[in-house]
Image (cartoon, rainbow, N blue to C red; front, top):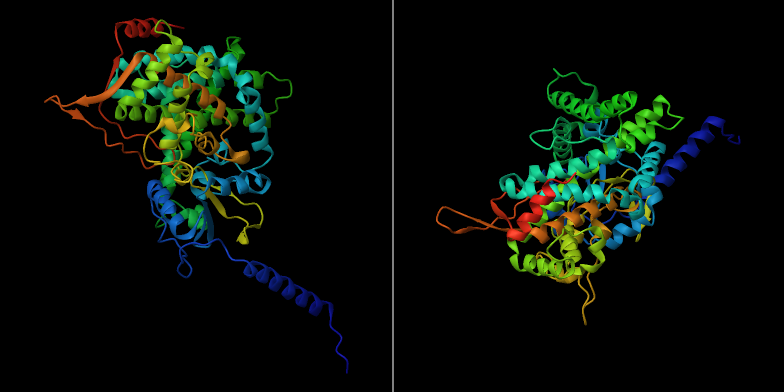
Length: 511
């Protein structure tokens, strides 16, 4: 008797062939090399707990396994990119499939950080965010209208730094917040004392660092999202409640203020007022505008503070660099005015100091992971769909093939001279890659450069002294967070001379 297969038999056989072919496809190519893992948990016990330990460990693994590394934890694939060329090959040349963000149960779904741009998935709303940011400051030409704002607040910063040298971080945050909140909401920050919007945004950014730097069990076991607070091991739910409230306030407080002013007819032209004034604003679009505005401040304030604080630390530790940069400013600008962005093309050494500030201590050494949207093959390695792709900016910025003696703060590496070709511009790596590059890059670039040039024109940063007159050398320690900051250190900040002090006092009163 001849066997005649039924439709069920045919379907089952086809399913087996399909499953087998998928398994064979994945087994045909290896994952990128990496440390061997254990059954079930993979490399979960090998991955350090803090961000600083992670970028250092990933950089160490580069010596053992190469520029692209694969690790796994509880079934989640991680691919670490330790080389700038590999990062560009994948995150820029193949950006169509490498531009998503991973679904992060704790930070994203529960605490709500998947609503602003930083952790938003690659969808139509993300693209709308990017389009609106490009119109605002996507080109240097668009940014030029804000130059007077940058100059006013840069001058005020100089006065604050000499008045409160023990509160450098707070003074930098107030300056960055004043600029970005004015652009986004037309909001004027309180110039003395605390400001409610600055305070809540600072709280929100600190909490985001905690969310991204810590290891949360719910990220490895997403089913825990649904357990009640009283359930054993669900104490994270209390953190969720507090952190989500902070983020909601961070988005709603300035947005409500500008809407009220618009109703009263007293609103200044800004990002939110111009967006809300369009004729086709639906509730859905208003929601998008609110989170786009939140993204402007959330993405820019902390990063510019980090860069400026690193500059101040580097000048304190490298007085020869400071003196050389000051001499260039004096020769080009003179001593009777502050530098402006129009002076930038004529100050190559100041430009080099700025670039070395970005490279020497990257603002976000591990960036935010990308998520691969489909299987990919690179150099005969399989990178599986859903893998978290992590650009190790720290490793790239300290790669001796691109930067000679990388741990030395040396602006000369970026200065062209006979027989010396400038080393790789850190702009190519520190602001991210592909469609996830920081949309506020031009804003951060302009404001940080200007504040560096102004500081060099009128201030001296030097080591503090103890009661016996001995210099106190800063240890150069940094916070262990997604966006790093120098740990507060004692220093002396003084006007360069009487002429500089007069210029500072005149600038303090500008509006």
